[in-house]
Structures are given as C-alpha cells and as structure tokens.
Image (tube, rainbow, N blue to C red; front, side, top):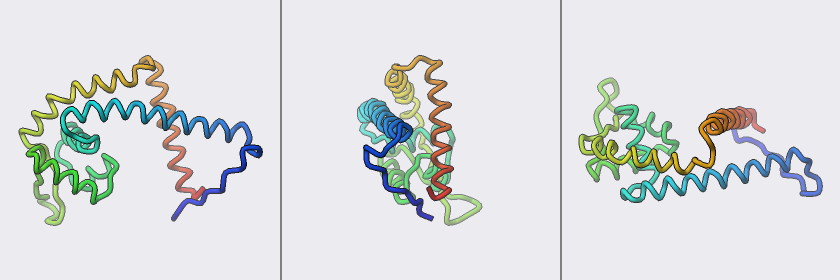
Length: 163
C-alpha cells in the first residue's frame, strides 16, 4: 500500500508545528550529510564505498549472514547486496557459502583476508565517527539516540497507517 500524503499548505497557511517539523527535517538531513561526509572520506582511503564497508562491518560483527539478512541489515535492495558482495568477492574479502538447509540460499562470509582487513581499518573508522559526532557530548549523544530512535519508529508507524 502506498502512503498518501496531503500537499503541504502554502507558507502563509502553515502553522508553527508544520514550520517546526520542516526545520527539524532540514536540520536532520544536513546533520546526517555532514557526519556521512566524514564516514565516506575515511572509508574512501581504503578504496571502499560506505555500502561495501557496511557489508564488511556487518559480517565482522555478526558472522556469516544469508544474503537476504545482510540486505536488510545494510538497507540495500536484493540486487544491491548481490552487486556489493560480488565486488567484495573479486577483492578476496568476502566469500559465498552454501546454506545446508536451503540449496537456493547463500551465506556471505568474510575470508581470512577480509577479517584481517576489517580488524585493521575498523578502529580508525570508529575514531573518525567519534570525531564526526563530537559536537555533542556523551550524555547528549545518548539523548539524541533515544530521540532519533523514537522519531524513526514514529515515522515508520505512520507510514504503515497510509498517512
């Protein structure tokens, strides 16, 4: 079911709540892009995209994953996860493994080379992210996590309502 959205009222007709929501959206988008730029720059040093690093990081922390599970974890399409895994297989960082219970399913897993690579670059990447979000103190980061989680869950629930 496709959510239905009402057209936004003209600026003169908007209320303070609408203006506040629009401001939040702009600030959220700009903040995300600023932090994402730090992440992209750090990962690019290793000739990776953020999506490729997402695959490596998920496999590093979760172990071998079915391609469908990996797809949902890193938020890409099924074709996208296949393309990403193919690229990482060619680099010798990831391998496909059969699924004993389902001949059609495949696992993605880090190779020994991939595991060593992630162990080497992950601490540097984590530090780059720490620096990128350093505009907030630790207590503020905890509050932001809680608020953003609530925001995301609320938006997801409303999308399911068709609004």
